[in-house]
Image (tube, rainbow, N blue to C red; front, side, top):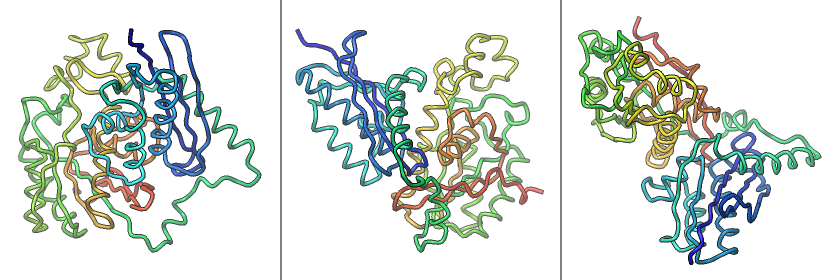
Length: 359
């Protein structure tokens, strides 16, 4: 009878890049068959997560090379990349993914995303390894890489995230995701789009990208006229899905879905009925950012997108917990700016919710 094993894996970096470690555990039912962890020197969170995946797969394969293995990770990025749904942009991560794919038969593997709070075993192993790295260090461990990057000759990719203009749903704070309503801009929204277009034209971006939804495409077309750039549509920048809540006000959702709404307020890992969690959207925003660096190294890129995606992109760039989005405000036709250095994907938030051009 074929065995079924579960691998939980994680990786982390203090500084990103910075001192990094990985951790993984292999389970059969409730029984822990193996634990592996280790430090990996200076690396990014994403590289550390792949190293945790590799360590966990190797441990499970050594236990039973013919077992069915369910790999549980709290990195939506790694899960989607290993499942073949998202491209792997960064060369180092691409090599690590190829290494992981060679360990165990593909048809015996299943990759599953789990919320961070459900991956505590692997997370503990990572932190134990990291704490050991910190305690054993004789010299101060560098966490600040931005100071040196700002005086280096490397030119970052700079991404200008523009939220679309006002729609009929905006003034009433109604949920507006990727649903069938797909509202257009109001007269005020068109005016806001014209003002932000003038500001973006001063920046002189090299590329203009938009979400496929009507409100972003309208905003992007106005920016296109001001800049002379063609509009490229990329679905990865689509707004977070609010499922059956789309078009409803907060009061309507609170009354019709009191329990679900309470869970949504309490956790970024909770998805509205038939919708998408903010953690999932954050992973998608990160994949979008990495894709832009890969396609436009050292260039300036304007992306017309949405409130939820901009907030999650800013949180991803700051390497903070996804709950940080609850402390970020993004207004219609505001500009938020992120720089990313292609050599190691170090990210810096240059601005958030700029609105001076709208006054």
